[in-house]
Image (cartoon, rainbow over all chains, first blue to last red; front, top):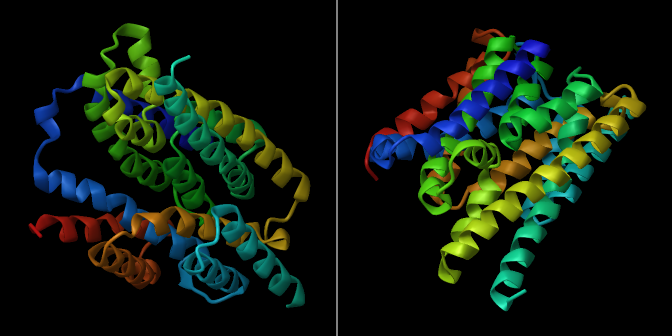
Length: 99
Length: 221
C-alpha cells in the first residue's frame, strides 16, 4: 500500500515537473499528442468495466452492474456527477441486501 | 479589485469548489480499496491528480499488483506533462514557485487558465493559481471527509461503494466523449478490457487497454 502511494506520488509529480522543464518541441509530435489524448479515454473505460463487471479474473454481472446501469441512465439524462454516483451506490446496495 | 480580476476569480473558485467536492468520492474509494484514512489523505496531498489517484486505488481494489496500480496512475498522469508544456511560457516562474506550479498543474487549473486567454496573460496566471491552489485546498478537505465517512461505514458493498467507484469512473469518462470517434474508442476499450480479463492477472487488463489508444491514435484522421 505504501509502495503504491509513494511511487504514484513521485511519478505523477515527476511527470508534471517534466512539462515545465522541457522545451515545447519535444512533445510536439502529432502522433504522440493524439495517442496521449486517447489514453485517458481508454484507461477510464477499462476502469469502469474492471471495477464494475470483473471479480478477480472473471467477468461477472452482479449488484454492481445494476448500479452501473443506473449511473449510465442518469448520465444520459444529464444528471450531475454526485447524483450519478449516489444513484449507482443506492441501487447496488439495495440489490446487495435483497440477495 | 478590477472587474477583470473578479470574473477570473469567479471562474476559478466555482471550478475549485465543484471539483474539490469530488474528493469525497476519492476518499471513500480509497478506503474501500483498503487504504487507511492517512494514506488516502496523503494520496490527495502528494499525488494530487484525481484520475491517477482513482486509477491507483481502483487497480488495488480489483486485486491488481502494486506495479499495475502505479503504471495505470502514471499513464493517466502523462497529460499533466502536456499541460505543463502549455503553462510554463504563460507562468514564467523559477525555483520553488516552479515546483509548486508543477504540483498544481492539473486538468482544471490548465483548463481555467486557457479559458482566460481573451482576458490577457495576467488573467491566465491568476486563473491558473487560484484554480490550482483552490482545487488543492478543497480536494484535500473533501478527501479527508470521504475517507472518514467510508471508514465509519464498514463493508463497502453494503453501502454500494463498490458500485460508486466504477460509476465515478463513468462520470469522469462521460464528458470526454465529445465525438463519435472518442465514443468508439471508449466502447472498444471496454470490450477489449473485458475480453482480456480471463487471460491476465488482475489489474493488467487496465494497462493493456492503452494498446487501443495507441492503435486509434496511430493513424491520421
